[in-house]
Amino acid sequence: MTLRLPDQRLDHWRDRLPDLLSRCSQPIVDLDCGDWVLTCSDLADLCAAVSEAGHQLGRITGKAAETIVSASALGLGASRSNTPSNRELQPNPVTAAPSELLFHHGTLRSGDHLQSERTILLYGDVNPGARISSTADVLVWGRLRGVAHAGCEGSTTAKIVALQLRPLQLRIADVVARGPEDLPQAGLAEQAELKDGVIAIEPAVIQSFQKR
Image (tube, rainbow, N blue to C red; front, side):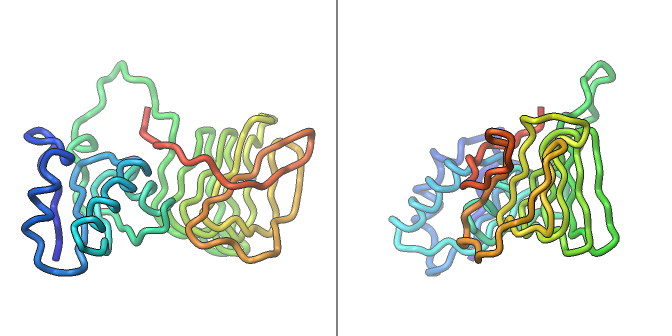
C-alpha cells in the first residue's frame, strides 16, 4: 500500500499524517513524498510515526532529489519519481545565481570521469576504474569504490562523503590516501576530510542538501 503525502500547498504532512496512517490496512506502507523536501530528521519522524501506528515503512519515492538523498543516508530504499518536481518545472529568474550543487543521477562505470567546479552530489555508485572530482565537496549517495578528488584546485576544507566509502584512492587538495579495507557499517555514511594534514575518515554529519 502506498501512502501519499498531501500537496504541500494545501496541508502540512505532519498535520495529515495521523489521519493517513489510520486509513492504512496493510502492514507494509510505501511512502510517496511528492514535492516535499524532507531532511533526515523529517524522515526519522515519519518512520517513528509509521512504526507507532503498527506498520512497517517500505520504499520511499519522491520528486525532490534532496528527499531521496536523505532517505538513502538513513539506509532506506528510495527512488526518484520520473516526473520533475514543481520547483524544477519553474524557470529560474535570469538574475538568479547559478546553483552551487551539481546533481548527477546514475552510476559511474570504469573509464567515466565526472568533474565540476561545484559541489557534486551523485545519487548512484562510483565503480572501480571511475573517477569523480570537484573543486569543492564530493557527495556520493551510494558506493564509492573508484577514485574521488575533492578540493582539486587546492581547497583544504573540502570533504568526500559516501554511504559506502571504500575507494581505491582518495584525494583532498594535494593529499592522497587509500580507502579503508574493512567492511562498512550498513546505513552509516562516512566522510573524509583533512585533519592535521592527513585524510581522516569518520561518520558523516548528514545535512539537508537543499539547492541554494
